[in-house]
Length: 243
Image 1 (cartoon, rainbow, N blue to C red):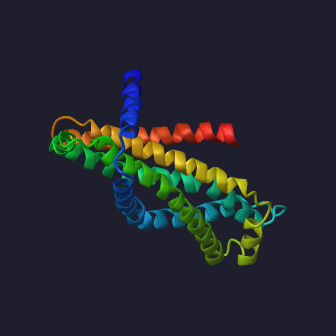
Image 2 (cartoon, rainbow, N blue to C red):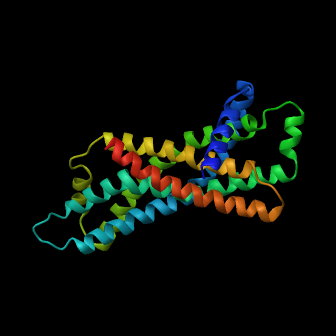
C-alpha cells in the first residue's frame, strides 16, 4: 500500500512537470469537460431528483409527532441534500461512470502502445492525457453537484406535494428556515476534493495498466472501488475538519 501511494505521488509529480502548451491543455480540457460533465447530466439529474423525492417521503413517514411542524420535513431535506446527499452520492455515481471511463480509456491507450508513441514523440503523456482529465473533473463536479442540489430539493417538493405529506407552502417554509450559506461552500469544497480523487486514482490505475483487455477491465473495476473508498474517507475527514 505504501509503495502504491509513493508511485501515485510520483505519477502526480510527472504530470505537473514539463507541461504541454497552455493552448493545447485548454483545448484538451474543454473536450474532457464535455465528456465528463455534459454527458453526465442525465444520470445525475435522475439520481438526484429521486433521492430528494424518496428522502422527503421517508422523513414524512417517520415524522408523525403532531408537535413537530411539517415544515421540518423541508428543512431536513435541504440539510441532508446540501451537506451529504448531493456532493457525496453524486460523486459516487460519477466515480462509476467517469472513473471507469477514464481508467478504461487510458488502459486501452497503454496496451495499444498509444502512450508509448506519445512519449517517443517527446510529449509528456501524463501531462497531455491525464492533467486535462483531472482539471476538467475539478471544474465539472461542482457544477453537477449544484445541479444535484437544485433537482433534489425540487424532487422533494414535488413528492411532498403530490403525496399530500405536506403542502407546498410548508415545504418552502422549511427550506428557508435557518439557512447557513457556508453549507453550500462546504459542499462545493467536498466536490472539488472528490473530483480530484476520482480522476487522479482512475487515471493512475489506467495509465499503468499492463497486459490485455482483461487487465483493462480489472483496472476499471479497481479504479471505481478505490475511488469510492477514497470518497468516503475524505467525506469523514472533511466533515471533521471543516464543520
